[in-house]
Length: 328
Picture (cartoon, rainbow, N blue to C red):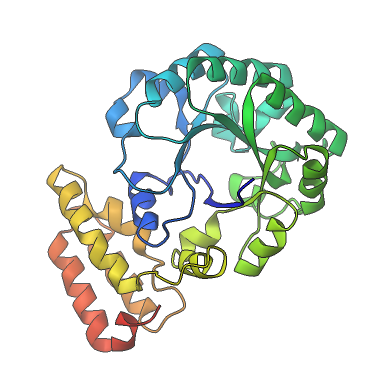
């Protein structure tokens, strides 16, 4: 079984523009969309929601829902858009998501989850996978987790992504749920011992390539979220140290390669800020990072920004920090 490294689905972060941007840095990373609600796929602008520029990276669509028929229809609609898999969100703890009865709250209803996955699997040729947590509220028991994963496996799930924290559904905000519940990686490691022949991916609190290497000794893959969104060039370290690929573009080459995409998208009416907001952390930790962030904030992460300003900031940073054009 091949070891994988992936970028987590993140609401308001991993949209189609972020997916393309990250693909310019890493050719080996597995990418996930932000969660798209099944009913939105059925009733909304499908091309706007589902289409993305063709890239070599595998891309998984994450969907949210709890109605088996709606999820099945959404899967059938989505299967011709170029996704490698369809992932069911069983881990998001937000109150808005709970109100609509999907995400982590569905861990309380394993039977319904099984019905949803079974319906999804029957509707599409694409593999169905899940992303969930180790427990919820006062339920943090390895036996419960084993039974829950077994239910999803029996229903047709082909991969199991486990955020190594439980979800506190009533007490904490989504942001707090990413930090306050303690990480319990041993739950995921033990789950892999039990499901020896199944693909188990670990998620939560992964910040360095050494973290990734350590996890890959015990599970089949590692999924990273905020560490990559806040510092996307972390992917370059992953390419070099995990995938043994030294042929990675510099930060400036990434931006230069992004410009044709910006031209294409803005010609279709996409606001420049919808793309450029994802590049704020590109120079994180480098001389010139503050200049980059300040300029983006004032000039491009606003409505009606134009491509000329992209060229201007690149010229300005090159002139002030020439070493950045060569640094990998």
